[in-house]
Length: 134
Length: 388
Image (cartoon, rainbow over all chains, first blue to last red; front, side):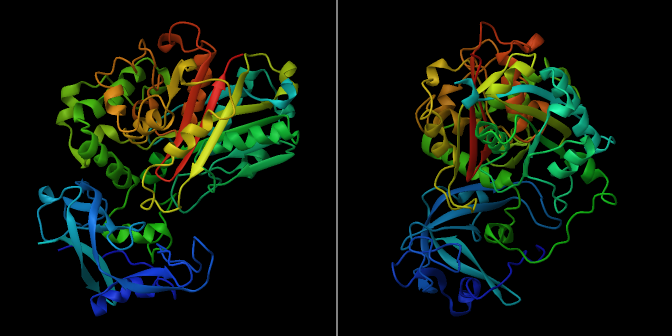
């Protein structure tokens, strides 16, 4: 049993990203003017500097861009080994989400695997994770 | 036109150790004294100080000495000082000094990087770690997933070379093997690397974060490294062979470690050649940042020594990058073999080699051009150094 995940500081811009899981949705900040997906969320669109930015639901599917199997216990109590992966989202391809890949052995993960979002809720934060698509 | 150029005129280094007890300010002054002697300068000729990343208390030992503290301790009447982490990697502190002397605001600038992480972590009462708390910035999108270390972030770039381009452990291992072999010839690496590393030992080592094993990660050490940057019209004041900063380049691609497709070395690399007539064919030695063993591969590719996705073939067998090879890499042992000097060791060694002062580890021939790099992930800085 791992200790609680380290928690991000929630603000008006990242709140929907970290709580979208309550509705089962992965929400990525998008610019209301130019349509750019803006990740991590910010007060302004990085592409056109519009302030009309808000998180909206995406499909929650993606591909493993790359990953590592971590064997080092950096933090007390965290079980090793575990996978850390970069997932590239299907409908927001400039966005990379760093995550873990639960539900399979560490040796079963490969670059190019199709994955879909799942959530680990801990005390009001829904941490996005990805599982291999069946 | 010498006055329009910037030169490295002196280099110095304190002892390099693990869990040293000598105060980090004193280590810094040890390195300053050696650099002054090396250049033939005295403190009253120094009129600037530059460091990376400036004094930081939050990460124990990461940067225990600031530029103002050093100027105060040395009684320097500074005209221009600087210290900050918001730079395109460590060697940018030397790049900033070069720009300052070219502009004429200072003549001789002490650039330094002092690290004290091994000591500080062994004495938490004296150097208390920062309290946990809520995460912010780019880290807050990685650390909840226990992606706690730059080792994890770099490993993912390295793993793409494994999957996409077929990099083997035997190939990646050449970086650490070369580092430890060279470190045996560096008196200042005695506390860091005790013996050469064999391929068998490398292959059997425990994995940290695939494909990086224990030998692929540098280890915390305690040290100060100093480089003196001087204006071209002040060279008559120095006694040692000046080394010209022939070109420099930096890059930052997104400020989150997990968003860029490739490390910033691939952007900074081509830029280094834009302001010089030198090409990769002129380079006699490369001193590439190796906080993690994969990073030199990104520099070989980014700078154009080989095609993207082929650096593991370029270093295959280790002969090309060996001390007697066609392109010697990290001749002092790099950070893997000579300690986590955090960037400045690569500039220091470039100067040593270009002046022919490498002793047992001196490369053969008459080396005139070297490349020193720093950074990894989304930030990178490179210096092209030349003996005219």
